[in-house]
Length: 74
Image (cartoon, rainbow, N blue to C red; front, top):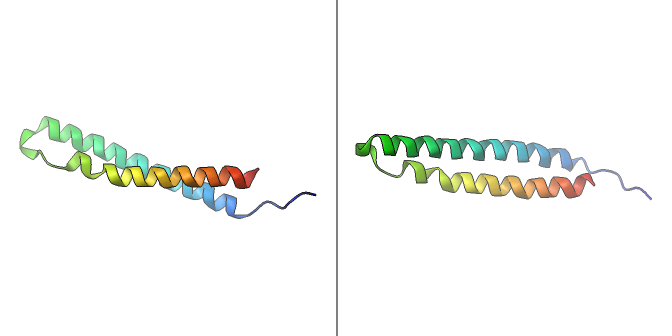
């Protein structure tokens, strides 16, 4: 007996794409901030580390949604 595919799998895939993109952008902004902090010593602060928690959270959510998408699409 075949079970029908859940339509929620597409929403988990879309959420994965969005969260992975936002997390990658935050990591890129963190690298740019680190470069600015290294290049201009007077601007030392928390630029680079300020983006890191948001990036980790977004990428963790993306990983969780990817796992859910894979289990629903089987």
